[in-house]
Length: 80
Image (tube, rainbow, N blue to C red; front, side, top):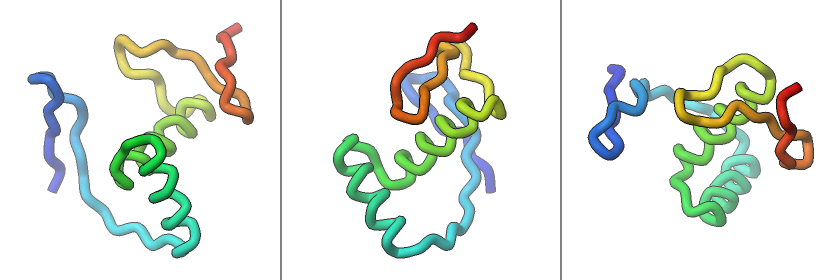
């Protein structure tokens, strides 16, 4: 069941739960990274997926977000 989430009164995105099978070491590394970034594990996974999709040109930035990319080292790259 998809569900719309709200953030500050605005609809952010529709969410759909799904099962993810993942290697335990990868899961633990993601959890540590999420803790470092003060995110939930789910939020960290979604953040990384969105970032990868944008960097690959498969997902446009949401309205109001800058449409820049990062290089492999995480440094901002200006659009050409």
